[in-house]
Length: 216
Image 1 (cartoon, rainbow, N blue to C red):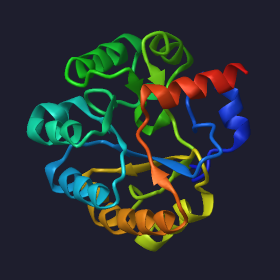
Image 2 (tube, rainbow, N blue to C red):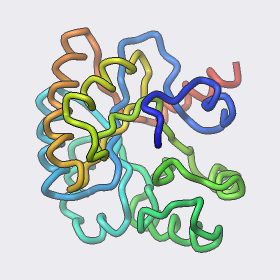
Image 3 (cartoon, rainbow, N blue to C red):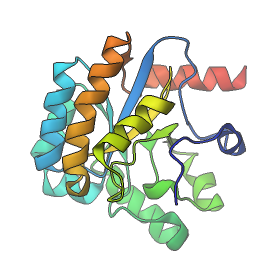
Image 4 (cartoon, one colour):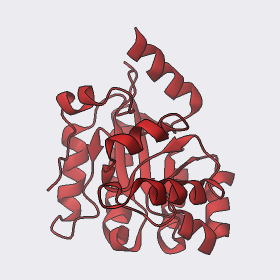
């Protein structure tokens, strides 16, 4: 069970997490979890390049270790990267100290201040500790490309229906999601480009603007 659109009341319960970027500009923030995986990440990079789109890749440390050239390709293309733990751990089912060590293990490879917990699941104390060291990035819209019950059309419609200016949208550059993400991503880019949208990475400037908006 998961929510395609994160409701405002959930976002308000965890105001220190980044759920979307406050902007009146036609901008979307596409993110990709679970890579890098050459068979998926490299085609994703090619599609993004076709639309002059920037994105943010939340990388699993073990995959970075296995595929350093693919990780390097993400950086060389000018995209942002974030920490997604070393072994894609579920915070709800992992003790705090092993979880923190796993995050730190990933951090040695993915040098980023951005962190996204796998499955979006963190215990309260995990969140309290990690947000001292990272900007915890969640999402506004979940495409559902990881869900075997969802068709590519359904995933496309999820983004079409719920994304709006400043939305942080989740895709996956994993083998499990390969067929759907490589079908849905070009359709999303084509549609929103025609609507006048641009596609941005979660840069320190964008996140700083988010922090100022929250304080105001």
